[in-house]
Image 1 (spheres, helix red, strand yellow):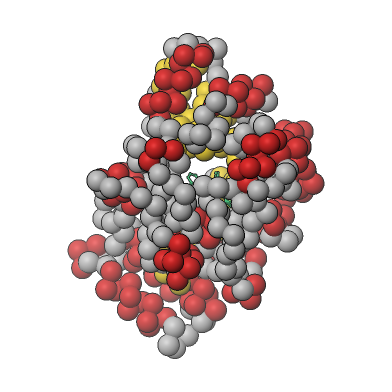
Image 2 (cartoon, helix red, strand yellow):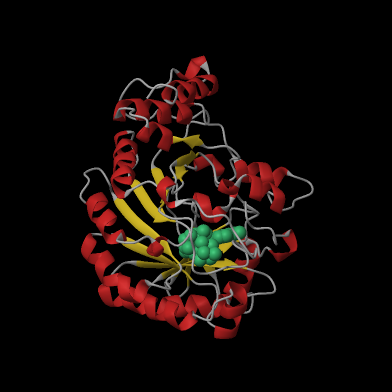
Length: 365
Ligand code: SAM
Ligand code: SF4
């Protein structure tokens, strides 16, 4: 404990302005923009079996040493602390979460926790053919599969792996298991802009909700440029040309996707993080597979929870540190990016090498 907790707490104390009051037990306080902490994205590995051009375009990466990854017991414990602070939704991610061995064991222990309203997982689908059954049996509530193209040649070029058929098989396996399914498509000019309509039809035919995601200038997206972004407005224009009038779905939610309905009742979402960020209602935080807490996808610094977990801190002490950090949270990374006059990738390759946790595949997309 000594030498670990005091330094982290000191760091948090520096962050917490006196007026927030910090942790007084129970739920996390609102952050400085009056946003609650409701949503945890838990990365279970930084490894991946694809190399999507918008996420992992480089030839080589540094991997987190295995002993540094939080064990299932540690992940479950950290999750408990977050639930105690008011988190209601947990999404397992990565890297590719299905690469983490025995993942259903973790899911079983998380699914048994009271207070967890929503337990979801985001995957590239490659290993889902074999895993859909065990994931469902373990108690996973729902699943999101990333799908950017329906063309095998394009998939190969975009991900550097020739595996679209396995992803499609994985999607079918999830459907066969009756797992509620969403499909996420990053809209990329020059890559899949001629497939946006076909992807929506693919989702509709399978009773899955499709969400388009604007290409983001996050850490790791070193090929990003604004001209490759297809904005929400442009997506809506294109879909209107094909499907006719589109109306917004009226709802109040802190979810990042704005949802829309086609004339035939098909509902889809758009996550416009690049051109219309949702920072004002962002209630999420991320924990990397090696236990670092990030309060914003764009944050450059994280908080080392693993040092607390392994350093002998009690649950209450860990809760206190998280709560203090949340109380001092003022992040609105995507809004700050939007305000930039010259917009370029968040970090250049050298900065990513020096600070790998900046990478999207490390902090959990
Ligand atoms: N490997 C899993 C997958 O691909 O679904 C989970 C991790 S991945 C980082 C999570 C999500 O982030 C995916 O839907 C992916 O498309 C998205 N993503 C990665 N890089 C992105 C970028 N530069 N802009 C927008 N979305 C991105
Ligand atoms: Fe693609 Fe997900 Fe792997 Fe990134 S983490 S390269 S988005 S499959």
